[in-house]
Length: 571
Image 1: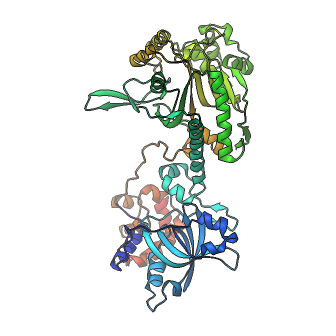
Image 2: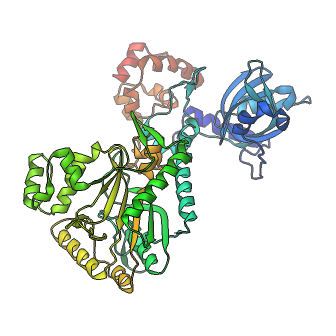
């Protein structure tokens, strides 16, 4: 493994610490009794409580001025300035702790423990006067340098999305504002959980590995259980197992969990995502709409202190009640097409006239769903219940009590995206079997998202499931809305990424073919120019200037190349 000059230097510092008898990765507890946020919030009003503080965190910057120094210190709650004075750290004649350990062997990114007292500098900045410090972790990789001006504006930030998502740990260190997204995400979940628990609904867990994928129309991931020699699916929904628990006698059950769908990836889709599903006995989808309004209003207040949330240039209001619009009325309103009056072939032909990609495998319900997605959903901005969907698209839902061919289902749309999906749950086992058989026919026509027959679920319904309503809410998309993020990758700690491309380190012959004399190849490698691609993308003037210093460091006994020679290397 080729290391950069900084990585080599940090490894040497690690060895130097060990030689001095200082453990760079100590095992014993370091007691933390104070956090940065506490100090910044409370110090001015209660200074006596901060005459001795014990804290741990990461060094994010230095300003060394002889026998004194300032440093920027970051813990899990925020950043604060540290002040180090040599004679306070080393009251005796031995000044090694300051002169060698602090000044020479510490780096930005190192984690330290400190003991000291809080004070205010002459410029009015709340700071910590460090009286003791201890190395808790020696960082071997340099952090990206993020520059901030006096007003807090960021320059040269760690902003490349691909790097940020791959190295979320670095993102959280150097972009601490990102943490707020995930704090709010956690608050969304805890607020929902508290609401459900207050109604005595039970939080449960259901299998991730399933022999039959069901509960949604989606393409599953497949895996294999070696001991049983059994093909399995990663679950695409938790619905069918949660309904089994309603059959078993629980009046309300819910589960926060990961679902997995082997489909495309974009700004609103990740193959692994989080939902909560809730099922409550003796309720219907009308009751569920009211519950959803109440729940999301509470969530918005808990996260942002108001029912309103800014998303881009739009202000969303989560306060109920929400408008209710049937899917066919929504299509009529935004396209002028009355799908109730058309058969499957006529709707398919209209879709083709609009330039939509539709196939013969799509039934009328699927075509209506496609039209809504293509032509309507982008217009639904404020929270709106889109109700009464085609029976073909809702195989687990009760038929509508008054509308033929429709079911009692709603989808909650906000800012053009589906956030929740809910039903009056089908509990007639014979009708449910017919619906599954219809799904099998769609599968035979080529619909690879159609559901499979689940005999055990049907058996459970035959024992009797009370009339119930259920809902699934997408946690990731709801978090996007409440934190003003247009990409799902921003609200998932570790989103799925393509395999990282490893650049192949250039061989000596590759450099020579690019025009670099062999004598200068070690210098370029020390300058972390390890591939020909990096060489061709480099600044010739910078390489030329850096070569002078590297020539001395490596003691290269060769006359410096001309600038024009270096330019020929990078062209």
